[in-house]
Picture 1 (tube, rainbow, N blue to C red):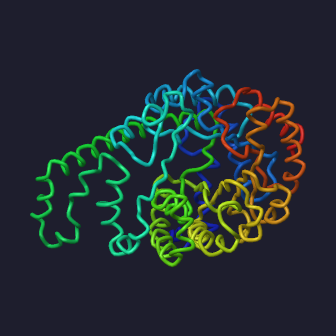
Picture 2: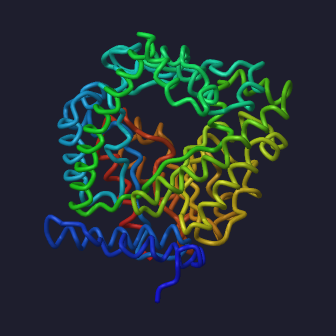
Picture 3: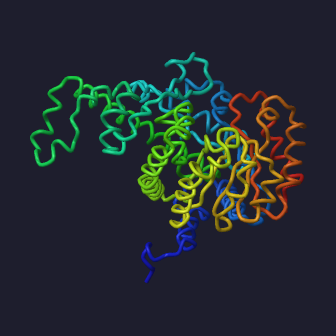
Length: 445
Protein backbone atom coordinates (compact mmCIF):
# COMPACT_ATOMS: atom_id res chain seq x y z
CA UNK A 1 0.00 0.00 0.00
CA UNK A 2 1.35 3.44 -0.91
CA UNK A 3 2.33 5.64 2.01
CA UNK A 4 0.22 8.72 2.83
CA UNK A 5 1.62 11.96 1.43
CA UNK A 6 2.39 13.26 4.92
CA UNK A 7 4.69 10.29 5.54
CA UNK A 8 6.72 10.67 2.35
CA UNK A 9 10.20 12.17 2.41
CA UNK A 10 10.81 15.33 0.41
CA UNK A 11 12.68 13.23 -2.16
CA UNK A 12 9.71 10.89 -2.52
CA UNK A 13 7.33 13.83 -2.87
CA UNK A 14 9.51 15.36 -5.57
CA UNK A 15 9.65 12.04 -7.43
CA UNK A 16 5.84 12.00 -7.48
CA UNK A 17 5.74 15.56 -8.80
CA UNK A 18 8.31 14.85 -11.49
CA UNK A 19 7.02 11.51 -12.73
CA UNK A 20 4.04 12.73 -14.76
CA UNK A 21 5.99 15.79 -15.90
CA UNK A 22 8.82 13.76 -17.37
CA UNK A 23 6.48 11.26 -18.99
CA UNK A 24 4.10 13.87 -20.36
CA UNK A 25 1.19 11.99 -18.85
CA UNK A 26 -2.19 13.22 -20.05
CA UNK A 27 -0.75 15.43 -22.81
CA UNK A 28 -2.26 14.97 -26.27
CA UNK A 29 0.85 15.65 -28.33
CA UNK A 30 0.25 16.96 -31.81
CA UNK A 31 2.62 14.36 -33.29
CA UNK A 32 5.41 11.93 -32.39
CA UNK A 33 8.07 14.59 -32.98
CA UNK A 34 6.45 16.86 -30.40
CA UNK A 35 6.35 14.02 -27.86
CA UNK A 36 10.01 13.25 -28.49
CA UNK A 37 11.05 16.87 -28.08
CA UNK A 38 8.92 17.28 -24.97
CA UNK A 39 10.50 14.32 -23.20
CA UNK A 40 14.02 15.36 -24.19
CA UNK A 41 13.47 18.92 -23.00
CA UNK A 42 11.78 17.91 -19.76
CA UNK A 43 14.55 15.46 -18.90
CA UNK A 44 17.21 18.01 -19.84
CA UNK A 45 15.69 20.73 -17.65
CA UNK A 46 15.05 18.48 -14.65
CA UNK A 47 18.58 17.08 -14.81
CA UNK A 48 20.15 20.54 -14.96
CA UNK A 49 17.96 21.82 -12.11
CA UNK A 50 19.01 18.82 -10.04
CA UNK A 51 22.57 20.11 -10.47
CA UNK A 52 23.50 17.12 -12.58
CA UNK A 53 24.82 16.64 -16.13
CA UNK A 54 22.18 16.50 -18.91
CA UNK A 55 22.84 15.66 -22.56
CA UNK A 56 23.42 19.36 -23.20
CA UNK A 57 22.92 22.75 -21.57
CA UNK A 58 19.24 23.80 -21.69
CA UNK A 59 18.26 27.15 -23.24
CA UNK A 60 15.43 29.02 -21.50
CA UNK A 61 14.42 32.27 -23.22
CA UNK A 62 13.32 35.28 -21.18
CA UNK A 63 11.26 36.63 -24.04
CA UNK A 64 8.99 38.95 -22.07
CA UNK A 65 6.22 40.30 -24.30
CA UNK A 66 8.29 39.94 -27.47
CA UNK A 67 6.03 37.27 -29.07
CA UNK A 68 3.29 39.91 -29.42
CA UNK A 69 5.57 42.18 -31.44
CA UNK A 70 7.05 39.28 -33.38
CA UNK A 71 3.53 38.42 -34.55
CA UNK A 72 2.84 42.00 -35.61
CA UNK A 73 0.82 43.09 -32.58
CA UNK A 74 1.71 45.00 -29.42
CA UNK A 75 1.31 44.58 -25.68
CA UNK A 76 -2.03 46.39 -25.49
CA UNK A 77 -3.50 44.19 -28.21
CA UNK A 78 -2.68 40.91 -26.47
CA UNK A 79 -3.83 42.30 -23.09
CA UNK A 80 -7.30 42.77 -24.55
CA UNK A 81 -7.60 40.04 -27.19
CA UNK A 82 -6.89 36.58 -25.85
CA UNK A 83 -7.09 34.99 -29.30
CA UNK A 84 -4.35 37.25 -30.62
CA UNK A 85 -2.39 36.48 -27.46
CA UNK A 86 -2.62 32.79 -28.27
CA UNK A 87 -1.80 33.35 -31.93
CA UNK A 88 1.34 35.31 -30.99
CA UNK A 89 2.74 32.84 -28.50
CA UNK A 90 2.05 29.82 -30.68
CA UNK A 91 3.72 31.50 -33.66
CA UNK A 92 6.75 32.27 -31.51
CA UNK A 93 6.91 28.65 -30.32
CA UNK A 94 6.61 27.38 -33.88
CA UNK A 95 9.21 29.69 -35.42
CA UNK A 96 11.81 29.12 -32.70
CA UNK A 97 11.01 25.44 -32.31
CA UNK A 98 14.60 24.27 -32.64
CA UNK A 99 16.13 27.21 -30.80
CA UNK A 100 14.96 26.84 -27.20
CA UNK A 101 13.96 24.37 -24.53
CA UNK A 102 11.61 26.71 -22.71
CA UNK A 103 10.30 30.28 -22.77
CA UNK A 104 8.05 32.68 -20.88
CA UNK A 105 4.44 31.73 -21.51
CA UNK A 106 1.21 33.56 -22.24
CA UNK A 107 -0.04 33.23 -18.65
CA UNK A 108 2.20 36.15 -17.63
CA UNK A 109 0.12 38.59 -19.69
CA UNK A 110 -2.39 40.52 -17.61
CA UNK A 111 -6.08 40.51 -18.49
CA UNK A 112 -6.81 44.07 -19.63
CA UNK A 113 -10.64 43.87 -19.44
CA UNK A 114 -10.52 42.68 -15.81
CA UNK A 115 -8.00 45.38 -14.89
CA UNK A 116 -10.28 48.01 -16.44
CA UNK A 117 -13.19 46.86 -14.30
CA UNK A 118 -11.07 46.72 -11.15
CA UNK A 119 -9.54 50.14 -11.86
CA UNK A 120 -6.34 49.15 -10.07
CA UNK A 121 -4.44 52.09 -8.58
CA UNK A 122 -1.08 50.39 -8.09
CA UNK A 123 -0.66 49.59 -11.80
CA UNK A 124 -0.84 51.55 -15.04
CA UNK A 125 -0.93 49.91 -18.46
CA UNK A 126 -1.37 50.80 -22.14
CA UNK A 127 -4.51 52.91 -22.53
CA UNK A 128 -4.91 53.21 -18.76
CA UNK A 129 -2.29 55.62 -17.48
CA UNK A 130 0.23 54.81 -20.20
CA UNK A 131 0.31 55.49 -23.95
CA UNK A 132 -1.26 52.84 -26.16
CA UNK A 133 2.18 51.89 -27.49
CA UNK A 134 3.74 51.22 -24.07
CA UNK A 135 5.57 47.88 -24.12
CA UNK A 136 4.55 46.83 -20.61
CA UNK A 137 2.51 47.75 -17.58
CA UNK A 138 4.16 49.73 -14.80
CA UNK A 139 3.83 49.41 -11.04
CA UNK A 140 2.78 52.55 -9.18
CA UNK A 141 4.51 52.68 -5.82
CA UNK A 142 2.83 54.41 -2.90
CA UNK A 143 2.50 54.02 0.84
CA UNK A 144 -0.78 52.13 0.71
CA UNK A 145 0.01 51.13 4.28
CA UNK A 146 0.99 54.28 6.17
CA UNK A 147 4.00 54.19 8.45
CA UNK A 148 1.85 54.70 11.54
CA UNK A 149 -0.65 51.97 10.61
CA UNK A 150 1.39 48.85 11.36
CA UNK A 151 -0.45 48.27 14.64
CA UNK A 152 -3.81 48.46 12.86
CA UNK A 153 -2.55 45.83 10.42
CA UNK A 154 -1.39 43.58 13.27
CA UNK A 155 -4.65 43.97 15.19
CA UNK A 156 -6.76 42.39 12.43
CA UNK A 157 -4.86 41.73 9.18
CA UNK A 158 -7.83 40.43 7.19
CA UNK A 159 -10.06 43.32 8.19
CA UNK A 160 -7.37 45.90 7.41
CA UNK A 161 -6.66 44.32 4.03
CA UNK A 162 -10.37 44.14 3.14
CA UNK A 163 -11.66 47.52 4.35
CA UNK A 164 -8.56 49.74 4.13
CA UNK A 165 -5.97 48.44 1.69
CA UNK A 166 -8.28 47.21 -1.06
CA UNK A 167 -10.16 50.53 -1.42
CA UNK A 168 -6.83 52.35 -1.57
CA UNK A 169 -5.41 50.06 -4.23
CA UNK A 170 -8.49 49.32 -6.37
CA UNK A 171 -11.13 51.77 -7.55
CA UNK A 172 -13.74 49.02 -7.83
CA UNK A 173 -13.33 48.30 -4.12
CA UNK A 174 -14.12 51.82 -2.90
CA UNK A 175 -17.36 50.64 -1.33
CA UNK A 176 -15.55 48.17 0.92
CA UNK A 177 -14.47 51.12 3.06
CA UNK A 178 -18.11 51.34 4.22
CA UNK A 179 -18.27 47.67 5.21
CA UNK A 180 -18.16 47.10 8.99
CA UNK A 181 -15.57 44.75 10.50
CA UNK A 182 -16.70 41.15 10.07
CA UNK A 183 -15.92 40.53 13.73
CA UNK A 184 -18.68 43.03 14.58
CA UNK A 185 -21.24 40.65 13.09
CA UNK A 186 -20.27 37.50 14.98
CA UNK A 187 -23.44 35.58 15.90
CA UNK A 188 -25.70 37.96 13.96
CA UNK A 189 -26.40 36.45 10.50
CA UNK A 190 -29.08 39.05 9.67
CA UNK A 191 -26.57 41.83 10.27
CA UNK A 192 -24.47 40.62 7.37
CA UNK A 193 -27.01 41.94 4.86
CA UNK A 194 -27.11 45.42 6.37
CA UNK A 195 -23.94 46.76 4.68
CA UNK A 196 -25.54 45.99 1.32
CA UNK A 197 -28.17 48.65 1.93
CA UNK A 198 -25.37 51.07 0.96
CA UNK A 199 -25.29 51.59 -2.85
CA UNK A 200 -21.49 52.02 -2.78
CA UNK A 201 -21.08 48.59 -1.18
CA UNK A 202 -23.38 46.95 -3.71
CA UNK A 203 -21.57 48.66 -6.56
CA UNK A 204 -18.18 47.38 -5.39
CA UNK A 205 -19.39 43.82 -5.04
CA UNK A 206 -20.98 43.93 -8.51
CA UNK A 207 -17.72 45.17 -10.04
CA UNK A 208 -15.65 42.57 -8.20
CA UNK A 209 -17.98 39.80 -9.36
CA UNK A 210 -17.87 41.11 -12.94
CA UNK A 211 -14.06 41.25 -12.87
CA UNK A 212 -13.96 37.71 -11.51
CA UNK A 213 -16.21 36.42 -14.28
CA UNK A 214 -14.09 38.10 -16.93
CA UNK A 215 -10.88 36.79 -15.37
CA UNK A 216 -12.35 33.28 -15.17
CA UNK A 217 -13.05 33.15 -18.90
CA UNK A 218 -9.69 34.71 -19.76
CA UNK A 219 -7.88 32.25 -17.50
CA UNK A 220 -9.62 29.25 -19.04
CA UNK A 221 -8.63 30.31 -22.55
CA UNK A 222 -5.04 31.09 -21.55
CA UNK A 223 -4.80 27.66 -19.94
CA UNK A 224 -5.95 26.10 -23.21
CA UNK A 225 -3.31 28.10 -25.08
CA UNK A 226 -0.60 26.98 -22.67
CA UNK A 227 -1.71 23.36 -23.07
CA UNK A 228 -1.55 23.71 -26.86
CA UNK A 229 2.04 24.95 -26.56
CA UNK A 230 2.92 22.06 -24.27
CA UNK A 231 1.41 19.70 -26.84
CA UNK A 232 3.81 21.20 -29.40
CA UNK A 233 6.68 19.81 -27.33
CA UNK A 234 7.49 22.54 -24.80
CA UNK A 235 7.27 21.44 -21.14
CA UNK A 236 6.27 24.13 -18.66
CA UNK A 237 9.31 25.48 -16.84
CA UNK A 238 7.39 26.65 -13.78
CA UNK A 239 3.96 25.92 -12.35
CA UNK A 240 3.58 28.68 -9.78
CA UNK A 241 4.82 32.13 -8.85
CA UNK A 242 5.74 33.49 -5.45
CA UNK A 243 7.52 36.43 -3.84
CA UNK A 244 9.89 37.05 -0.97
CA UNK A 245 7.86 38.15 2.09
CA UNK A 246 9.94 41.34 2.34
CA UNK A 247 9.02 42.15 -1.27
CA UNK A 248 5.32 41.71 -0.50
CA UNK A 249 5.54 44.47 2.10
CA UNK A 250 7.85 46.62 -0.02
CA UNK A 251 6.06 46.25 -3.34
CA UNK A 252 2.42 46.33 -2.33
CA UNK A 253 2.20 48.12 1.01
CA UNK A 254 5.07 50.48 1.80
CA UNK A 255 6.86 51.27 -1.47
CA UNK A 256 10.61 51.79 -1.88
CA UNK A 257 10.83 54.95 0.20
CA UNK A 258 8.58 53.60 2.93
CA UNK A 259 10.30 50.27 3.41
CA UNK A 260 13.78 51.80 3.15
CA UNK A 261 13.00 54.22 5.99
CA UNK A 262 11.26 51.48 7.98
CA UNK A 263 14.52 49.53 8.18
CA UNK A 264 15.89 52.46 10.23
CA UNK A 265 12.87 54.05 11.93
CA UNK A 266 10.67 51.08 12.78
CA UNK A 267 12.69 47.88 12.16
CA UNK A 268 10.78 45.73 14.65
CA UNK A 269 7.42 46.71 13.15
CA UNK A 270 8.75 45.86 9.70
CA UNK A 271 10.02 42.47 10.85
CA UNK A 272 6.70 41.74 12.51
CA UNK A 273 4.88 42.56 9.26
CA UNK A 274 7.24 40.34 7.25
CA UNK A 275 6.69 37.47 9.67
CA UNK A 276 2.95 38.12 9.62
CA UNK A 277 2.67 37.41 5.90
CA UNK A 278 5.19 34.55 5.77
CA UNK A 279 3.19 31.71 7.32
CA UNK A 280 -0.06 32.23 5.37
CA UNK A 281 1.95 32.83 2.21
CA UNK A 282 3.67 29.46 2.54
CA UNK A 283 0.32 27.71 2.90
CA UNK A 284 -1.20 29.56 -0.07
CA UNK A 285 1.79 28.90 -2.32
CA UNK A 286 1.81 25.17 -1.58
CA UNK A 287 -1.96 24.91 -2.02
CA UNK A 288 -1.79 26.76 -5.34
CA UNK A 289 0.91 24.49 -6.70
CA UNK A 290 -0.85 21.35 -5.50
CA UNK A 291 -4.00 22.48 -7.33
CA UNK A 292 -2.05 22.45 -10.61
CA UNK A 293 -0.12 19.26 -9.90
CA UNK A 294 3.04 21.24 -10.51
CA UNK A 295 6.65 20.86 -9.42
CA UNK A 296 8.41 24.28 -9.59
CA UNK A 297 7.68 27.64 -7.97
CA UNK A 298 9.47 30.67 -9.41
CA UNK A 299 10.35 33.81 -7.43
CA UNK A 300 11.24 37.21 -8.89
CA UNK A 301 13.38 38.83 -6.17
CA UNK A 302 13.02 42.60 -6.28
CA UNK A 303 14.73 44.17 -3.26
CA UNK A 304 17.37 41.78 -1.99
CA UNK A 305 20.23 42.79 -4.30
CA UNK A 306 23.53 44.40 -3.35
CA UNK A 307 22.46 47.92 -4.29
CA UNK A 308 19.17 48.14 -2.38
CA UNK A 309 20.26 47.02 1.07
CA UNK A 310 23.45 46.32 2.94
CA UNK A 311 24.67 42.85 3.74
CA UNK A 312 23.67 43.34 7.36
CA UNK A 313 20.16 44.40 6.32
CA UNK A 314 19.91 41.41 3.97
CA UNK A 315 20.79 39.12 6.88
CA UNK A 316 18.18 40.70 9.14
CA UNK A 317 15.24 41.69 6.95
CA UNK A 318 15.31 39.76 3.68
CA UNK A 319 16.92 36.36 3.88
CA UNK A 320 15.40 34.67 7.00
CA UNK A 321 11.78 34.86 5.82
CA UNK A 322 12.63 34.01 2.21
CA UNK A 323 14.65 30.99 3.31
CA UNK A 324 11.77 29.91 5.53
CA UNK A 325 9.46 29.90 2.50
CA UNK A 326 11.96 28.03 0.33
CA UNK A 327 12.66 25.43 3.03
CA UNK A 328 8.92 24.82 3.46
CA UNK A 329 8.47 24.30 -0.28
CA UNK A 330 11.39 21.88 -0.42
CA UNK A 331 9.87 19.84 2.40
CA UNK A 332 6.79 19.45 0.19
CA UNK A 333 8.90 18.13 -2.68
CA UNK A 334 8.71 21.42 -4.59
CA UNK A 335 11.71 22.70 -6.53
CA UNK A 336 12.40 26.43 -6.45
CA UNK A 337 13.69 28.83 -9.10
CA UNK A 338 14.73 32.31 -7.98
CA UNK A 339 15.39 35.21 -10.34
CA UNK A 340 17.91 37.42 -8.55
CA UNK A 341 17.31 40.83 -10.09
CA UNK A 342 20.35 43.10 -9.89
CA UNK A 343 23.59 41.71 -8.44
CA UNK A 344 23.94 39.16 -5.64
CA UNK A 345 27.73 39.15 -5.43
CA UNK A 346 27.63 39.98 -1.70
CA UNK A 347 25.07 37.24 -1.01
CA UNK A 348 26.77 34.19 -2.53
CA UNK A 349 27.87 32.73 0.80
CA UNK A 350 24.22 32.69 1.94
CA UNK A 351 22.14 31.66 -1.00
CA UNK A 352 23.56 28.18 -1.51
CA UNK A 353 22.50 26.89 1.90
CA UNK A 354 20.15 24.23 0.53
CA UNK A 355 20.31 20.50 -0.20
CA UNK A 356 21.83 19.78 -3.59
CA UNK A 357 19.59 20.04 -6.61
CA UNK A 358 16.54 21.74 -5.14
CA UNK A 359 17.16 25.40 -5.90
CA UNK A 360 17.93 27.17 -9.18
CA UNK A 361 19.33 30.69 -9.14
CA UNK A 362 18.69 32.75 -12.27
CA UNK A 363 21.10 35.67 -12.25
CA UNK A 364 20.80 39.12 -13.79
CA UNK A 365 24.10 40.92 -13.10
CA UNK A 366 25.85 38.58 -10.66
CA UNK A 367 29.41 37.44 -11.43
CA UNK A 368 28.75 34.01 -12.94
CA UNK A 369 32.26 32.68 -12.31
CA UNK A 370 31.94 33.57 -8.64
CA UNK A 371 28.45 32.07 -8.50
CA UNK A 372 29.62 28.83 -10.11
CA UNK A 373 32.43 28.53 -7.60
CA UNK A 374 30.37 29.48 -4.56
CA UNK A 375 27.10 27.59 -5.09
CA UNK A 376 27.42 25.58 -8.32
CA UNK A 377 27.99 22.33 -6.44
CA UNK A 378 24.57 22.59 -4.73
CA UNK A 379 22.39 24.90 -6.82
CA UNK A 380 21.70 25.07 -10.52
CA UNK A 381 22.63 28.47 -11.91
CA UNK A 382 21.12 30.22 -14.92
CA UNK A 383 21.77 33.40 -16.89
CA UNK A 384 23.10 35.97 -17.54
CA UNK A 385 23.49 37.11 -21.15
CA UNK A 386 23.15 40.92 -20.78
CA UNK A 387 20.01 42.54 -22.10
CA UNK A 388 22.14 45.16 -23.83
CA UNK A 389 23.88 42.47 -25.88
CA UNK A 390 20.61 40.74 -26.72
CA UNK A 391 18.85 43.97 -27.72
CA UNK A 392 21.62 45.83 -29.52
CA UNK A 393 24.32 43.30 -30.32
CA UNK A 394 24.74 41.25 -33.47
CA UNK A 395 24.01 37.51 -33.51
CA UNK A 396 27.78 36.90 -33.50
CA UNK A 397 28.21 39.08 -30.42
CA UNK A 398 25.38 37.22 -28.68
CA UNK A 399 26.96 33.91 -29.58
CA UNK A 400 30.39 34.97 -28.32
CA UNK A 401 28.89 36.12 -25.02
CA UNK A 402 27.04 32.83 -24.65
CA UNK A 403 30.18 30.83 -25.45
CA UNK A 404 32.05 32.58 -22.63
CA UNK A 405 29.24 31.78 -20.21
CA UNK A 406 29.20 28.14 -21.32
CA UNK A 407 32.94 27.89 -20.81
CA UNK A 408 32.56 29.25 -17.28
CA UNK A 409 29.32 27.69 -16.11
CA UNK A 410 28.63 24.50 -18.06
CA UNK A 411 31.36 22.18 -16.68
CA UNK A 412 29.89 19.63 -14.29
CA UNK A 413 26.28 20.37 -15.28
CA UNK A 414 23.79 22.40 -13.32
CA UNK A 415 23.66 25.32 -15.75
CA UNK A 416 20.85 26.81 -17.88
CA UNK A 417 21.67 29.36 -20.57
CA UNK A 418 19.37 32.39 -20.43
CA UNK A 419 19.34 36.16 -20.61
CA UNK A 420 19.88 38.32 -17.56
CA UNK A 421 16.53 40.03 -18.16
CA UNK A 422 13.48 39.87 -20.41
CA UNK A 423 13.97 41.17 -23.95
CA UNK A 424 10.60 42.50 -25.10
CA UNK A 425 12.29 45.14 -27.28
CA UNK A 426 14.41 42.69 -29.28
CA UNK A 427 15.19 44.00 -32.75
CA UNK A 428 16.79 40.95 -34.35
CA UNK A 429 15.13 37.58 -33.69
CA UNK A 430 18.30 35.85 -34.88
CA UNK A 431 19.82 36.85 -31.55
CA UNK A 432 17.64 34.17 -29.94
CA UNK A 433 18.89 31.62 -32.44
CA UNK A 434 22.46 32.64 -31.64
CA UNK A 435 22.00 31.28 -28.10
CA UNK A 436 21.07 27.88 -29.47
CA UNK A 437 23.97 27.99 -31.92
CA UNK A 438 26.35 28.53 -29.00
CA UNK A 439 24.88 25.57 -27.12
CA UNK A 440 25.20 23.28 -30.12
CA UNK A 441 28.84 24.31 -30.43
CA UNK A 442 29.95 24.25 -26.80
CA UNK A 443 27.08 23.07 -24.58
CA UNK A 444 26.92 19.36 -25.42
CA UNK A 445 28.32 17.08 -22.73
